[in-house]
Amino acid sequence: MAVSNPINEKQNKSEEILHEILEGFTSGNVNGVVDKIETDSTRQTKTFQPVETEDRESVVPSKIQELTVELMEAQQQNSTDPESASSFNHNSESDSFVNSESNIYDVIIIGGGAVGCSIARALSRFTLKVVLVEKSTDVSQGASKANSGIVHGGYDDPHGSLKSKLSHKGNKFFTQLNEELNFGFRRCGSLVLAFTDSEVDGLPPLIENGKKNGVHNLKILNKDEIMRLEPNVNPDVKAALWCPDAGVTPPYLYTIALAENAIRNGVEFRMEHEVLDIERDENGWFSVRCSHESSDIKAKLVVNCAGLYADKVAGMVGADDFRIVPRKGEYILLDKSQGSLVNTVLFPMPSKKFGKGILVSPTFDGNLLIGPTSRGREEAHMTNLEVLKTLLTSARRTLPIFDAKKTITSYAGLRAKSDRGDFIIEESNAVKNFINVAGIDSPGLTSSPAIAEMIVEMLRNELGIKLEEKTNWISNRKGYGDIYANTTMADNIVCLCEGISEAEIVDAVTRREFPAVSTDMVKRRTRAGMGRCQGVRCGEKVAAIIAKEWKIKLEDVERRGPGSYILPHRRITNEDRTLLEELSMGGKSEQQTIKPKL
Image (cartoon, rainbow, N blue to C red):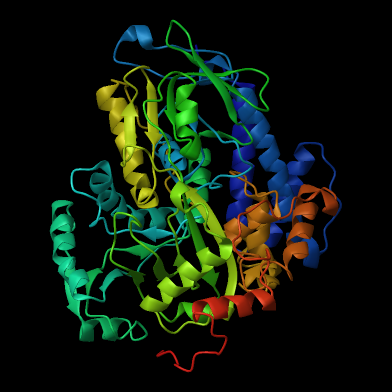
């Protein structure tokens, strides 16, 4: 006989109330929403003071946060109930089990980058108990944050490699993913520019390689065709390879959207959980010891997506038959006045030493991006000034006219390149049920959805795991601020540079799947603080909203976290702008006289 579970009833009630509040708030029925809050508050013997009409909508965010906490508590209690235990089930009946421990899962994913979060969302479609552990306070804190945000066409990776198989396949997912998750994606196309006869000769082999990889709509453009498409490009260009499938996306928001949707579908995310050790017992159970955890997290399957630390994590169980050889990539970001100078992603000819090379690209949000470098140990001696000069002079060859003084920030990231020279996506030969997803450098962002599907098929076909699809899986995610669109918060612009409203910030701070608790987290979700002033004017306003919604002291709100910069100052100064202009002009400080064609 089925027995009613009071924990489930509490969870379902919280979800029901929260759903009704959000639906009412979205439709603009603020009074009805507050009435609902007051009714349910009375039912729960909580006292609320009458609310004046003009202040009624301010009650809603606090109530959403309160219900979110209740829901999380109910879910946590529910995780200890045998009825909601792990459902890992091989085709062999002896491998199925039910447990009553909250720290036992079917799958542990290590690493909260684009690939780890893609896998988490893909596995959330099935009746598996999945947990993702991440050492940072937020997802997308490694290479997934500090990269170009380019969704590549897939034509240049050597045919037969995993990169060649997954890049173009991953590219095709992005239109639907963006429709479902609202992270922002635009197909703007890309050009590989050839300035010499030898570079022109290198274009047909790229097309042939692309065709082998499944990319069939490539075309070589002549100079006139290029100049019509990109009127500000260097007029010395002779030809170019056109790929209409390439696009741009905010990589951090893409990763956050995947994580939020995975959490909504039941995947647990444990932040600030650095993996310290992994053991495997005689029955095949992995015990993962993490920081900030009193007991080990256990599972029969581990997916290692630890990026730069993938070899270290694999070594904990003797599955490290590869090495990660990091390469550093540095970027310069210019403000939106420069973003309109180009329409497509502009690449130089690729090379073995520098890979895809230093690109010049519009970002999804309208800035101009220059970079990256590709520095290994042999280039570690380069000074920051030398790096800046390399970036700027290379960009000048592609786009002679840009104003280096319009730079608003710089950043750097490390790519987790493997010593095999290709992606590593395989079950370890030495350790059963330990899957390494390692060496995911470029085009890792592009390939991430295809990698996730590859892991699903690996579980189903190679490991023989029965994957039962959920009937209530939710594919969609709303953008920030949507539920407050008809409120005065939507009209209160907090970040003037980017036009970000209080509604968007409050939504990011109170969103139940993955609430933002620092100004950096708000910045990555809403772009508040990403404009020309880099948070100088809005940073404290954002912090005040966080303090208010989380009922903490203003001084306790975490501000900007650590970063990697190649300019002398963290926030650009006039001294930095003059330096950038001199470097980009080969030591000349005078302003260019060529005017852009708009």
